[in-house]
Image 1 (cartoon, rainbow, N blue to C red):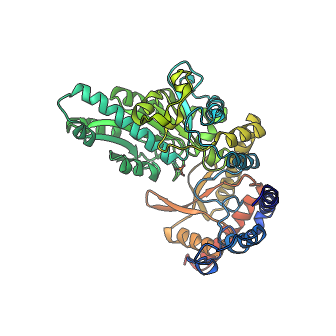
Image 2 (tube, rainbow, N blue to C red; image 1 turned 135 degrees about the horizontal axis):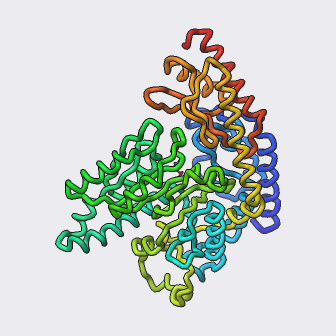
Length: 481
Ligand code: PLP
């Protein structure tokens, strides 16, 4: 393919995406296909001869699109949002076009330097304490990771290495394997599945503590677990607090947890994967109270801040904790700027993989095209739409709200036995017009309704609500079956 054909292919693809976005409401949010639908439609081997892009794009439209779940549809209310915006897509294209790998500064100076700059911008937008920023005189800094899962794991590995050094100093007679096997981590049962996975991958015993009736980590439960572990000769090492839990969007209290972690030398990691975006709104910043005691803070612009996956923003108070854990030296990795001690980060030592994409471009484009005002307006619109949905639920005596609406999430159910809500969800999934997930709290099954699409309007809320109520009528007419 030469550059002229690339232009045609590329223009056609952009047209395709623009058209897709403009007509997305016309498609059922969930595809009609059955598992394995694609296998017989595609050849089993790579084509012998190269094919025309027109034919490939046609196959994409006819074979792939029917098997796509439309995450950007205003009928998609499952999980949490995955962001998408035009400036971000263009940023992705340019990043792919340059195809640089930011192994070190010389490998592409702009790749490191733009990331430093936009992570400072973003940290300031969130009003994070200055010590977390690359622009602070101290050892703090921000970096783009692939995911919140990866950020939790990276900080767990750094905390593990740090605790190992500390405990070894205190107990020089203990061998390192022994110390590592005695490290413990803590979180609440509201934490995301990725937190449990990080404990598994990092081989650190994780205590999953019961949250209180509001879904917040209990202070007493944390202290008790830490004390018990210490009594048993274990070494508390890592704590993951959640701001905006996946199930019902609850917020742990950092100002309560932080001092406990400080007292016991525990690394406090904050997972604000979804809700962190809302901290660019002054009215939500109180939920971050106590963040100055955290060792690391993470949120995903790729969830709720209009930047396409992957873009997970991680800040640490002391980047030396990452480099102390992850540096591996080789002659081919030596770099001029590192030797010149310029204070610029060598980001490969802040992450798991060696290679790194130029993800800062899409973040930079998005922040500039929307500006602070545009981003705030986008989030407030989503929150207002969630409140509109909650009002519709509250006004209908057949339904109840399970917990107060938070951010873009409303948890609701049909009053009475769980069976009715389950039936409603089954019907909605069969009809494929809207997509939501169920969850349960204190034995009550409920449906999570999340405002996800960037294009969501009031009329879309009414569309989804009509679909819900029309199916509810059918269920209640048949006595909940
Ligand atoms: N943490 C929370 C609170 C989440 O809600 C999620 C995903 O929804 C994650 C972590 C995982 O995010 P990622 O897919 O970026 O790993």
